[in-house]
View 1 (cartoon, helix red, strand yellow):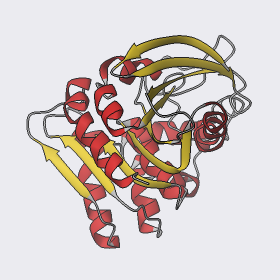
View 2: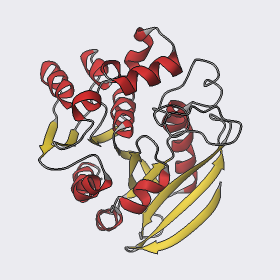
View 3: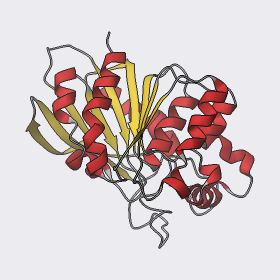
Amino acid sequence: MEQVSANRSHGGTQGVYTHASAETGTPMTFSVFVPDHAPGARLPVLWYLSGLTCTHANVTEKGEFRAACAQAGLIFVAPDTSPRGEDVPDDEAYDFGKGAGFYVDATQAPWAANFRMRSYIERELPALLAEHFPVDMGRQGITGHSMGGHGALTVALRNPGRFRSVSAFAPIVSPLACPWGEKALGGYLGPDKAAWREYDACALIEGGARVPALLVDQGEADGFLAEQLKTDLLVEACERAGQEATIRMQPGYDHSYYFISTFMAEHVAWHAQRLKA
């Protein structure tokens, strides 16, 4: 692991790091904010998974999380959204290929060799974080935006007991039921929709998966709401299954980081309350 940059901010250190990933077969970049802490202390960690076209840099530069994380004593980790490199296959469209890993382990050629973001997020990067940073891996929360909201929900639902808290900003709640999801899961996993269900939050909840605490914020003025995000499907799935959830529609807010940054400190505080020792 190599440090790309380190900057003092809000009583902590904002770092960017790169390493050679065994899962993706490529260099991977991620950012970590570590608040000041006592020597030997272990801090809870909040994972943030980004959306389509994004890298680690979008939330790092625009998310406005550092002051809240410093106040709460919370480490904030932001991975990239896909493998990168000249030899990595890509697609001309913004919603498939580089920048659009959808947090799946691809099974179809030519994507299967590099697009292993599920294993990267669930196994490889947590092990690296535990080795190099002062994290308490017994106190983890996860959040994300759009495609990353889909990632946060599904990673948490597939890994019971790992995350004490789960939240999302404008998540894709059911890739089985929207054009983004149909394109991505069909391309990465093939036509058998039974294989898609482990990457669909609504299907996982319907199948019995649960998380301890769930918070979702969705802007009512989001242009992707009706066709792609379909928040109502998550509301219905949680109600049918008895999954405790706070799902809030926010009037006037869109899909951008103006929306995310508005509610970021509230999400950080919500996670911090649940990640106390």
